[in-house]
Length: 101
Image (cartoon, rainbow, N blue to C red; front, side, top):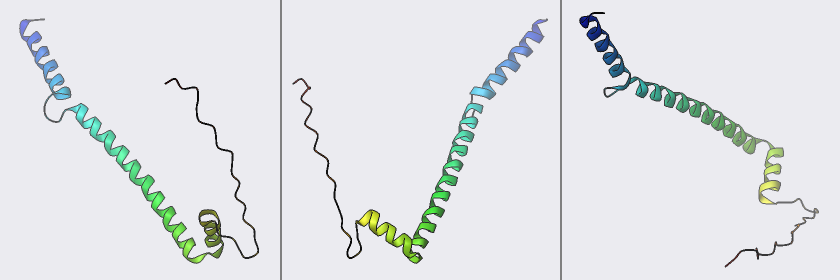
């Protein structure tokens, strides 16, 4: 190869490296932004499903007596008249005495 061809090849390689890594917005930055956008869109879809689920649960809480009773029993510890409520306590675990001071 002549000297001019070597120079042209080096210039092309330099331009390719500059296009890939150089400048304010390099290709690696572009790919990182694409990845961040995909992750953000995925998070938006997940949150949208969660919001839809919570809206449905809210509607059931407002309109469905079975759901209202289940929540009152599970979360508020409520019982019907005539029912008994039992609290089962476990023995407390002794403090850890194996620690060196």
